[in-house]
Amino acid sequence: MNQEYFLYEKCDNSNKLVIFLSAASSKSFTGYKLIQDIYINKLFIRDPNRSWYHNKINGVSENIDDLIRKIDKISKKTISILLVVRWGGVCCNIIWFKIRNIKYFSLFSSDDIK
Image (cartoon, rainbow, N blue to C red; front, side, top):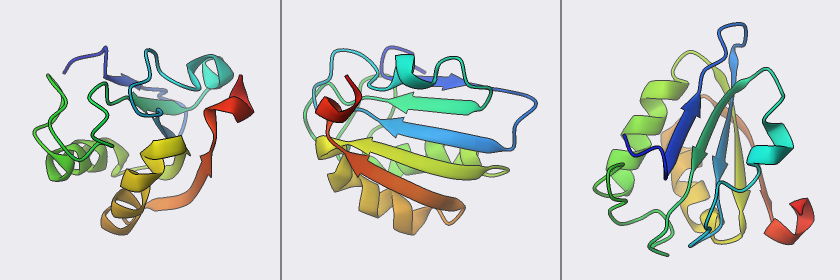
């Protein structure tokens, strides 16, 4: 898995997962500094291709369905929270409907977390 675009940090003492979809063409994982010290499972994903997570992400997924399968595999035993920045919201609704254990999601502008 290409950790430049898909970074999973496991926390053995937590049954919660925060999934953070970065803004389109983001150069780093949006929100990483915001939650890096919180003891919770974290999954950061970014799409450098500006395809809003629908197309291939090199070393990560072939398309959105493949990406959803990878997220679902990680999130199976957790209560998941999906945080989405700007254009990641286009993908958010699809993920929300396909992965049933996502209990909450929030969509916001990257300007909100600088």
